[in-house]
Length: 402
Image 1: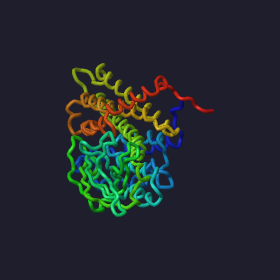
Image 2: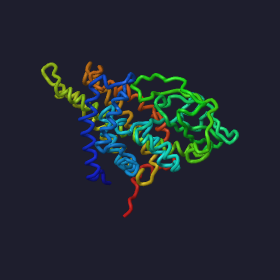
Image 3: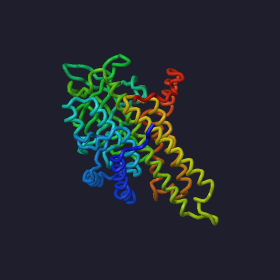
Image 4: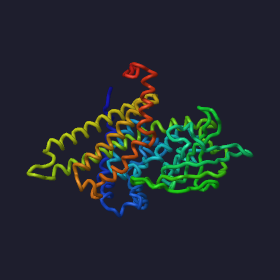
């Protein structure tokens, strides 16, 4: 097992890390750079995008021939962690959800014509995108088989009716991937469709308020009322919707973890710096055993998370779906983000609770980590199912090939 990285990736990491510290972190300190929902202002973001492109750091997860740096999951793990040292980092490099996952699935399964129309503008940063799957009860959430939105063939077109909600980025998105029911089969009853915001027959019912800062475009409730789509809007083929979902969400869950590790590291650095300078009762906070225990635990948890994420990324590159590895990483990293940020606020006291640092931003944002892309309890059930199916093989290391 080799956890080292090559010189080219290290060089790109160092360039990206320096860009984050020198350019993006500075933007966080000025509230003028925020929009009304607690994210980076779109005009500021456009200027930042131009700087990222000029620095040759745009879309590292995209193949070189499409304008990116060509990194797979292990390279992404290194770079995504570094970019999310800033709360504005991922969106600056065009690596934020949901665009990141949408670019991945479109590159993986779309036809060339679909890539030209639906993928390339997202890669270039010309449009934003969204993935419309989650529905109000009794519709689908963590269980896609419960999806109630329907797509029926009428006069040679697909007619779509139904409702989605908590659809991330929908308010700003131009390109959408939509999951709808086209049959009764457990494995082949869903189909993925592509649609544009200007297509008639749908609307945004409302932008749903949340406790945390919001991604651009928020989390919206959508209503589909007779939207008509042609066959060229079908992604991967009729009845392949569940497969589209599985392919997309597997890596997407892991990229969330990569980014969350960066936020956790930022929280530790803020707390450690405060503790190193704050004195009380004749002693610096950093010299108190209780503070050292909190920081030591945080560092250990983050390092465990990094190893888990990298192992899952490596296994994906070896051709494995790595489902149990991804679930393990998702649980651990989401929990450590919440725990580490809470402890960092505790160490910083009132300063941590205020908006003088980004700790409160990370804390509010981090709570969703326990829910998005499968709640903790769902992933625990996934792990349990693998344990029951594989018995002692669950603990195997895997054998390499000479």
